[in-house]
Image 1 (cartoon, rainbow, N blue to C red):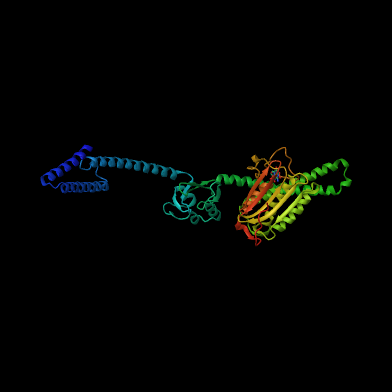
Image 2: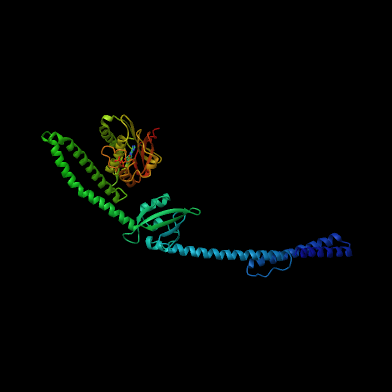
Length: 437
Ligand code: ADP
């Protein structure tokens, strides 16, 4: 094919040479020949451009030679592109049909949380209709404060449970998964059955605890009367009375803590939050911890920002903080050091209890806050320990938007830190106390 172009060029050059010989004006005739050839090339290229733009003609472009070759190549690529586009469109259709049929509500969000696509289940469970709600922020379509925080923080790893905004008494577990360039897949799954099972379990525990409360109180009452008359009891009964008393106390604590946990589980927000001056309640808790330590004579160090206040429930914070402080006493050998801190920094307010006690193995940390979880069945529970303390701490913190951070080394000690977000701080020292080293 190339030869056609070559002969074309040779013919023009030869014609120019002939005219040059005839007219003795070689330079002029070669220039004229080159000009004619360039004009022809320009016209052919313009024709080729029209052919490419037209996009419909499959006939190879004239004239034969390199231009014809180019048109055949372009036509081949164009056809291949068309086939690929068709295939992709078919895949996309299949994918959309599959996601549309998914039982889980699926919504594609852009980086600002605006709806880009949604399936049919999203309309059913969330009331999000595609394409009607295209470009609308999901937090404007579903107005729930906890969902707003969830989407804002892009909490990809944890699921959030919300009530369905469209179907009463339905509960959804929501997950946000990042994909593509700054896009998010918002998936909501119906977990009503699981929610009901949890509710039944929780109600059962609350009801049983409630029913046990009265008999235990009566039982303790009689025991106390008997103990008041110890001098009348045969000496062999005295250790039995003491044991009965200790176990009755333990049962009462257990029932009270189970009831407290049930109450905490009802809602993940404090009902009537108010500013809490933590430093004041910490001084009290340290006094109680000294009493608990008794002859074990632990050393206590308290460093607390005197004006730092967070909004929440004082009684719940007392429960959480006392559990952590009393655990430190219970799991630190006699004369151990227990440091308690309450301070604020740019990340929020922090309550920290550090001990140099027995510590906890890394493998237990994931489950340590589960109710009744035992680090080691051979490890005796601390006096009065029910195995519910850290579960209570976890729930209290959840209701305050706070998190628990545990650092511990077996044999060296543990640090339990409660991190409250800056939004919970209502007052703090003009110069925030820096975290003690
Ligand atoms: P318990 O009533 O048994 O103290 P918790 O829920 O408060 O129950 O704690 C769960 C377990 O975590 C405890 O049984 C104990 O093994 C471990 N633990 C808690 N705090 C500490 C601590 N400061 N040092 C060592 N182990 C701890």
